Image 1 (cartoon, rainbow, N blue to C red):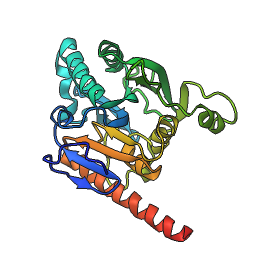
Image 2 (image 1 turned 180 degrees about the vertical axis):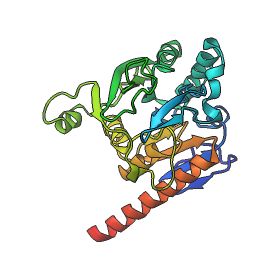
Image 3 (image 1 turned 30 degrees about the vertical axis):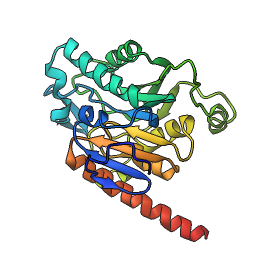
Image 4 (image 1 turned 90 degrees about the vertical axis):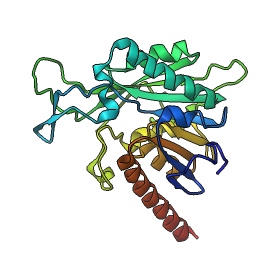
Length: 273
């Protein structure tokens, strides 16, 4: 694929279709070519790791995700500065007609929305992902958290229009306009066979996002790629992919999943021939 990240930066894993990089997203973003990616999907830290508890499989479990999510102990200003910084760096690598999708919960999404506007983006949609099988609230002091928000924004360059496959989305929705509330289950166990990530998104969610806002052959970028769902779907749909993560254990999962997907695509191609 085209050289988008400096050749001097070591590749953790690379094929013709994708590149994975191990390291700090802030540092790696500065090594990227300006206006080089068509779409960004980001699932940044939610700042949930506060030593609390949730429910998993009917049992109490810690909400702590890892050191990368420990900003919960910092001030609101520090957390907002974190969001502004990575969002600013992402804007410089996004093409003039490119868009960015950012997933979050009430713990970080308000900061993300403000940061997008402060850094010059135009917010296009506020998608509500309604989970059909959320974990129960074991404290019994709040309503059960059953939604996440996904903000979709464009770079806001006046000289360019963003890509949106309106007709395809309408077709997938039975001939009706697709609304900004998407309903579906949490990530299936079958999507975690190569390893588990605490905030792994389901494939159907990334499939819809990619089909809505990218074309085959375009470059998709994820600065916090985790277990690689964005990359797996990008490769399956014929897009190119670049992913960053600072946790090698997660990149190992990404690598395994993408190798598996590439193998399946190769075998499918042979059958069609």
